[in-house]
Length: 224
Image 1: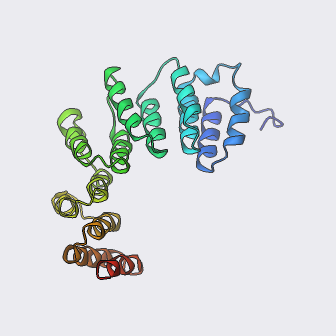
Image 2: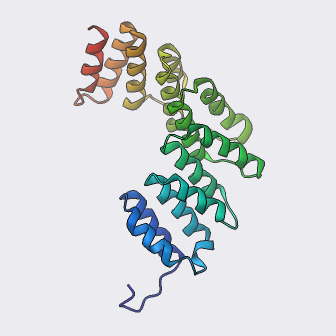
């Protein structure tokens, strides 16, 4: 690009950092980041947001934090990127603290924010808080939960071994549960040794994904 005399811009660098995050190419990302330190590009929101996302995706939470707090201004993408970085790397409490800080700054979360929040609740074993956030989406922010949010909620309670509650959410949500939802319910049944509900979940899974043998393996453990 340089050889052709074409000038890079903020979109160029933002796209580059996104690509580095997607391919775990943190070394390449760091090199370009360092080259931009004395330029104005790091103060461009798209570039800084992509840097936060890149470092989070590559597991470098400290670099994501530094980039985030060095930003002169932040938008919902910035906050969501930092929440996601925490959630991706097991800093579940920090992810939820960041959501609180986001609200205090007067920035409203969006649907992508809540996917990461629910993921943090799931991996942190926070089933009640997770269900609270699901309800809060519509009640407090006017955001209608999508199937991704419901599946996350099913995973939240499923990981806590609440197979019955997971099944209730699946039946009540305004979408047809997908294989991921039934897998979460089946996993919860394994924890609780609920063979009856597990058989139903396995059958539903096979109806949707008949070529996938994973349900047979999981179901067999219920009877062993």
